[in-house]
Length: 73
Image (tube, rainbow, N blue to C red):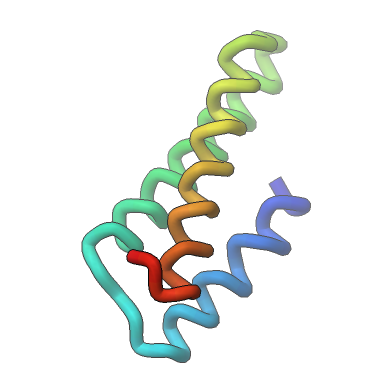
């Protein structure tokens, strides 16, 4: 989870510095948290399909934050 935090944390800090907080950015942050938690659990349990799905959901949440940084949301 640390490697994804390197992307997530700067996005959140940039949005905070911009004063940009919308319902979609708040939901994206919550979805990212739960997806990363699910990823860690299913990774430990060794469930490959669920692990990939959890990773993809977290990635999409980060993509939403990137769109917000560039003013597309």
